[in-house]
Structures are given as structure tokens and as C-alpha cells.
Image: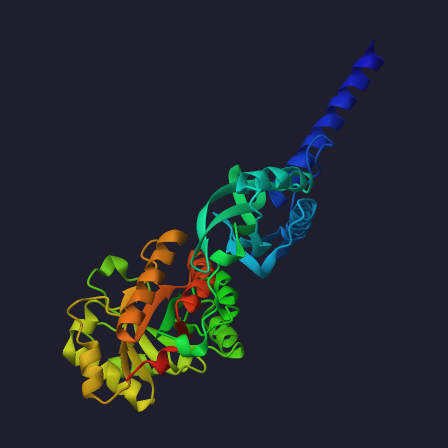
Length: 406
């Protein structure tokens, strides 16, 4: 009996040591040491970096792409105008990013096939690759009515649901509904899209740099990704501006480390503007970040704009305050000057951003050109990219901001 009790105690000690070892592994990595055979393998590759943990879903996305292609082939459909992009978003609540690959494509359905029928045909192929048909909803493609099927990856990460769209399939019923690409002589207006707030995060940089159309990068000084944004923009041939922080009406809105404030002396303002300009490589112009209080102060703006003129840069008034005198003073000093005419993304909803872009198209038709401002955010990347065919079909030429200043 004594021997049995001793063996039992030894077994308990072994179990306790195993439990302690597993707990240490879990505490250090955030993951159990092994998954049981009954648990599915994660759909991502994990990579630890100095900036946190990267969860890379690219391999799973590739499997979903292949499954979508197989489903379309089985339905005897060939996708058209396929566009591909790499995506990256910050992780919620922890350091690191999530990466994956996306595609968008056009599919022309014959009359005897419905979007619902195609969704049902794709579902088993996508499921076999570990993906999911996320949903179907009305949309537009090149200005024509379309139905969009979203396919992607659904997972649970840190006890929260995660959805990544890998394939966007735009469906139209007949080629005839797609408007022809406009001829050069049919152009009806120019549009400059200025994207503010580069520097906060890395993800939108590549999306806008790889847009394939003129995008004006307005980069904040002294932020973690400021130089990376400017360098990537310049290497892609885009125009770079300084997004100069000026004092807002509400101090609660002020988050930048260095801000031009109305109580600063002229000399302090000059030195602050000089340093901000020197911090961004390759810039050609300046617009104001916030500044609803400072842009209404004539002395402050005269001092700021005098420095900008000395550097032979142009200026765009972001018009964050209806009482702004920035553009007026800029023209009085002889600077090439422009003004923001519409903010694109006061809402982060993709469809509402598209609605603003359509409004900008109407403004360009009416006035011959328009300068608009958006922000370096993932949904703004999506909306602008998706709207380019529709805008160009409407006769809009995208240009850099310096082409519209006067």
C-alpha cells in the first residue's frame, strides 16, 4: 500500500510540473504550447518583430483565391479586370499587425444565372479552403449597377471575431451596362485628392502609394511613420506636402507634439515652421492640420505663410474654420494658393465616402476642377480605389494639388 501511495504522489507531482510548464509557455507567448488534434490549426503565420506580433493570413488568402477561381471555372465564368493588393491593419489592443492579400474582380453573368446562384456555387469551394462567403449586397462598378459578393476569412482572435475580405466579386448581368472608358477629349474636370494625416500608421501608405493615379500625400511632422510615408510617396512619383499642425479652437482636440499657437511670438512661429518643413523630405507645399483658431488669426497666418513663401512652397487652406483668413493672406503675399472644397471622410463608412466622391465629381463638372481632402485611413483607400473607374468614366482626370493652385 505504501508503494502505491508513493507512485500516486509521484504521478501527481509530474502532472503538476507539466501544468506549470504549460502555464509558463502560455504566459510568455499568449498561445497554448500545442493544439489538440481536435482543434483546427490557425489560419495565419505568426512572426514576432520589434514592433509586436505579425499575424500573416496571406497563405490562407491564397487558398481562398484558388477556391474562388475553381468555383468560377466550375460555373464556366471567367473573371475580368482583376486587381490585387496587399493589406495590413493594426491589431486591436496589442502591438503588431494583421496582413493578408486581397483581390477585386468583375464577373459578367449570363441571363440564366443569378447572383444568388453564383453565391451558392462558390460556397462549397470556398469552405473547403477554410474561407467563407461573407455576404452579398448592391454596389456599382464603373458607374453601372452591380451586385458585390464578399469572400474571405472569418476567425476568432483574442476572443473577438475577425473578418478579412480576400475577394470582392462585382457582378453585372450584361457587358452592355458597362460604360465605355472616356476618350481624352471627353474629359470634363480635374480633381486633386489630398490625403492628410500620413505618419500615424503604416497601413494606408502602401494603399495610396500604389493607387496608380495622382494622390497628394500630406505628411505630419515628427510622427513614427512620417518619413516612411514621404519616402514611399516620392518613390512612387507622388506629390508630398507638409501637414502643418496649427492651434484648434478646442484644446481637447490638440494631440500633436508641436503646434503653432496664437500666443507664440513671430520668431517662435518662424522657427517652428522652419523645423517642421525641414523634417519632411521632398515636400512641395503645405496645408494646415486642424488650426481652426490659428487660421482665423491674421498675424499668425502672415508669419506662417511668410516662412512658407521663403521656402518657395505653395499653400492649401484646409478650411477647418469658416472664419479662416489663411487663403486670403496667402494670396496677398503672392503664394500659389488653393483651398479645400470638400472633406471626403468625416464618416469612415466606405459607401458614404463614395457618396462624397460622387459629389466631388459633380463639383468638378460644374467648376472645371475641385480640390478635396481625405485622410490616411483603410476605408478611404478602399473607397478611392473602388471609385477611380467610375470617376474616370465620368470624365474626371485625377491630378496633383499643385496643378490646381493659383
